[in-house]
Length: 85
Image (cartoon, rainbow, N blue to C red; front, top):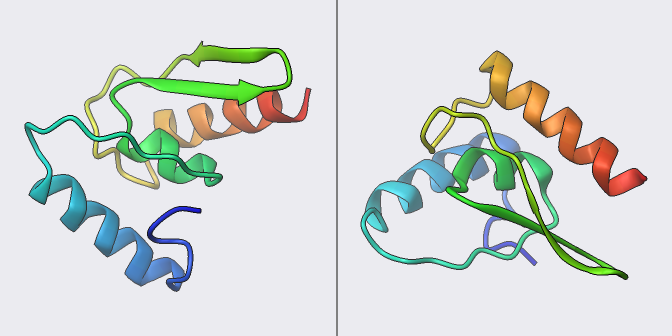
């Protein structure tokens, strides 16, 4: 479960940005079921499934990526497709 999962969407986005700033320069392992959160906050992204763990591509822009940025939305859609395959 993500540390932000029980929050409303606006507060979740604000807390993600705050946590990202507070943890800058530190190594953090974030386990989440939220594709948007994974795309917004990750420097590297791995997907776990029955066959193991595999890397997943991210936009070239650095995190924390804007929720409404075209590359973020596209990457989120690609991640959802990969999770549903």
